[in-house]
Length: 172
Image (cartoon, rainbow, N blue to C red; front, top):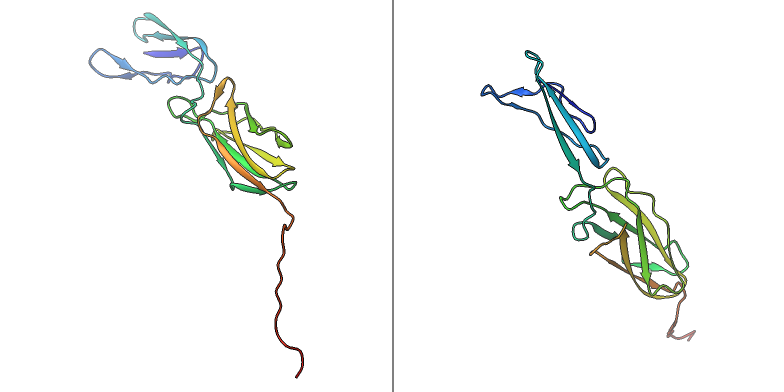
């Protein structure tokens, strides 16, 4: 039995199970929609077709993760780096996804623009603030708001109080 798929991949030859059946593993591509698989017998020229409906994968709000390189940063400095890993409902990484983040409270804070997710399903954003205080970061992939959040505390790079005590005697 020879096989042909118009979308995705399938081995050209199916495995003969020697019980009148043949087996092949179909691997879908990244594009959703209709996929047609055609099987042709090499001896009698018989033709069989199957049509599959491939659905779009969805990011999992629960299984995707958000993490910070550290949970504090100096105001007005380089900030903190947020790493987002996007996986689907089966736990498989999702490449090419657009990730956005929202910081609360938003006043005087900025979130960098992320590149689309890489082959490991990861991307990074930089969180910065010009005022001290705690910021909560919520991440979204398309319409899906991730369950995992992050919190970063911005601290001042100024010294608030300095107490110097000196003691001792000079001379005799």
